Length: 546
Image (cartoon, rainbow, N blue to C red; front, side, top):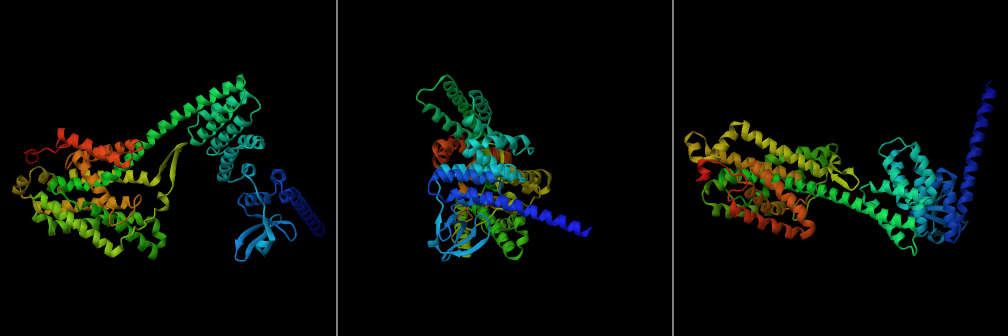
């Protein structure tokens, strides 16, 4: 029995070896055309190599496309080479056997032209259309869509018929429609493919149809069906343009809300301090800067001492930035500002001087150059809602973070004793003091709260802007515009003002540019304040109305 089993296993081994040798022999024969000088022979060889179905064919074609396929002159053998000192590290392209270091004088690169590049991409796509990895199938379908070789129609039809992954099916459908539009046997097939493509709001599809339209218009004597196809392609382009315009509006709104969220985070603390104390705090931007540098320090500590927690450094930086910036704010209020209440010009000059001191202090410690704060893995990348519309995760996170900060402040103002005292001081400071409220303590805590919120804004800004000593200066003017436009001391007014300014800027920028857009917004706010000096949502109370 053992003898029979051993004989059976030996026969199987011989069979597998024979099949492997046969496939290798087919690949060897098919690749001989790559040794030729003419592009016609090389093109035929590429098709033959792909047709073998050998696993090595993918490696050979990828090396050919990447400029790493060479002919070893000494024995006229195809090799794959990587640059090294003194020559190339080479392996046999057919067998994968390592050869070693080959001098530059003994290798000659296999040259290809643009037509061959398109063919190779298409063939590589076909070789991976039936891969077990959905990502590879998606990549293959996209490669076929770009190159659109005629010989890929049958493989694409088979792959689409057997595809079950819902994320890959649209890519294969798009690729097959592109193939049908270019190589369809009948005008009806091309019309059907055009209908599929016209329903896609994709810039790549728009580029494809624009190219097809140019090719059709280049015909000297287009027939009746060809004229109909030209009209249909034009209609398809119009349909895609309308969808892309709509998606562009949505993207502008998203970008505007994102910018508005940044302005809200930067301005909301200023709205609190300005509303309660009437202090024009020119150092508010530096509280944002301190929060950003706190984020940088936390990330560096994690990188050096706890690299496993690096992805969570941003979360840990939020409360720390609030504490550090808040304490700085309390220190500024207790040491300088409390002596200048009721003297707005002096407070403006004093806080401006404090801002310069803080900037120079940061330059002395961290240097004048920008510091990098990397995004954690869970904030990297984009969410592709649909073709032509992709939203970045870090912008989405900032919008949600701003909403959470606003909700936290509303709860503090409406549900806590401190919030009640703050509102009382805002509406009538003298009456609040006569009722036993320690207005000095409320001022210090309010200034600390506003500065702490600015520090949290710095955490968010570190993900979309450079962390530098001048970070806060870029947002201080916009913050004042938001506060004045929305209504001094009113959180809901600050929210509406920030979102209004953010969305307006994003819709103006494509037509006027970023600088002119800000100037137009500033002029509009000045004109608005002439009609409503207290902003959109004015505070009510005897003191503020007097």
